[in-house]
Amino acid sequence: MRLDNGQNVTLGTVIARAGEGTIYEITGHPEWAAKIFHPDLKDLAAKRAKVTAMAGSQPTGAVQSDGFTVLTWPLHTLTGNDGTSGYLMSRIDTTNAVEIHALSNPADRNNPLPSAPQWTPHATWQHLTNVAANLCLAVETVHSVNAVIGDFQERNILVNDTTRVTLVDVDSIQFTDTAGHQFLCAVGRPEFTAPELAGTNLATTARQKPSDLFALAVHIHLLLMAGNHPFLRGHWTGPGDQPDALTLAKTGQWAGGPRSQLHTHPLAPPVTFLPPDIQRLFVRAFTDGANNPNARPTATEWREALTHIQTTECPRGHQIPAEADPCPWCTIDNERTNRRQQRATPPISTGQVAVSAKQIPAAPVGSNPLITASPARPASAPGRTRTPVIAAAVVAGLVAVGLVAFLGARMGQSNTSSSSSYRPDNSDSGYTATTSSPTYAPPSGDLGLSQPISRPECDGSGVVILGSVTTPGAYASGVQRLLNAHPGAYYLKTDVTCPSLRPRTPEGNLIYAVYTPAGRTQSEICAAVRRAGGDSYGKWLDRSTDPSYIIPC
Image 1: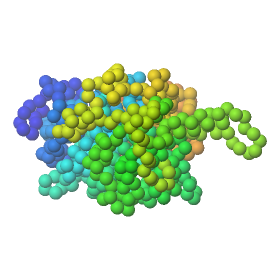
Image 2 (image 1 turned 90 degrees about the vertical axis):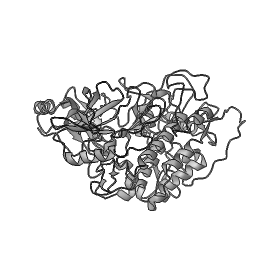
Image 3 (image 1 turned 90 degrees about the horizontal axis):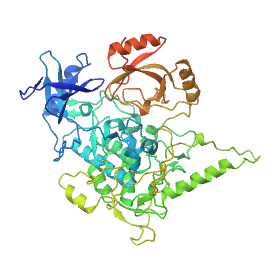
Image 4 (image 1 turned 135 degrees about the horizontal axis):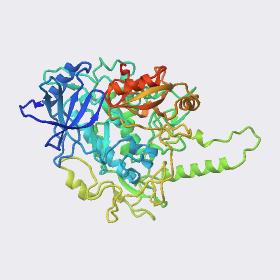
């Protein structure tokens, strides 16, 4: 293969296969990787033109001075003698990296898959704040070259065990070349889509930077608020059923927002436990930004506020912002205790209905209808110690590059001399300093069947979809019937699996699919489809294939 500067390189071992192409090592260059597009890729000429333009506009900071990759930005285009094409990018170390939901979602964080990195249960609230700050840096870097991330969802964000962040699948972003030609981003996830884009055709609509800032605020909310989405989980006080997330976002009604009819869920932290500066940024992002997208805080504003958060510990050992009073995790623990006691008490004959554990959502969001500043706790409060989120020496050492990182120790390793000690998180509602084993929390979307939900990797492999269930209220029974009909099959929830799967029905219903793994080539997958028979079909599991695409067999 030949680079655009004339240098010849040799493709090495295959790293992964994706919907748009195959990722290779580069022989003799461990710092590089190559993405070679499939020759039958739709709009291949446009994709070549886009990566050529991107390679000619390298953003400052895409790779840090120590070699850490913030963006997998195209470095050079590649051309083969046989007509194949692709691009060269920095290779990232994925051995200790996880997708961001593995941190923001408490169930995922406390229960990593056996094949996944095992450091996530040791992440504290302080670490999650650092991840948020480093995500802001990645957004700043993209916006510095007049680009818009567009498909700014959890599968495209990797976090390593020092809280540093890398954005992947960067060739899908919206990019404008030096001649003013725009290459659009045609895909997006509803729960991260800005309200001003509701009802638009993303394949033909140019996005603006404030749409990224909406998604950024959602990610920060998920990280700081125990995995609670601001427009999905709360206590709805308005008429009828709770509207969908995009409808709430259009009207600026979010859990805990000013004058919002979506109040804090009893098992979620209120937004008022956060420092006043952070509360005001959320109001600008979700309340003011609903009508004026330009009111949303920039990534730089978020990063500055996040890096100034100071933490302390409550008497029970929960890690909280210094201003928080009362401790939200204690409040949630008390509520859980009350609910357990109520379930253990025989119901009385007054028409009351006992609440089943399965009726209580597994993942904790937050709020009071009004946002007010909580009084700051004195530094000498009994039973508390106040520490900055970022140790001063660390901040001073990183001013030049702007990246927040925990240095000198990685999560999961003992470091008792540091103020950033790594303690297990043993509760899906808060952050505890105890050393007992984490209590089990089911993965997001688990239906409580005898077979747990699966979460396959988005590594370019293929699956055969044997059947899907899209009717609310019938998910558990429908999936169980399909599993009974196909021994050895698995089930997944599409909106938390891979972007190549349709996340919801046109009516907005969730989709549960029963499937079997089917190999990595089209011929292997089609052979598996023929064996399955019926209405089965093949799909790629990756981060780039259009979710409407079905593998032709």
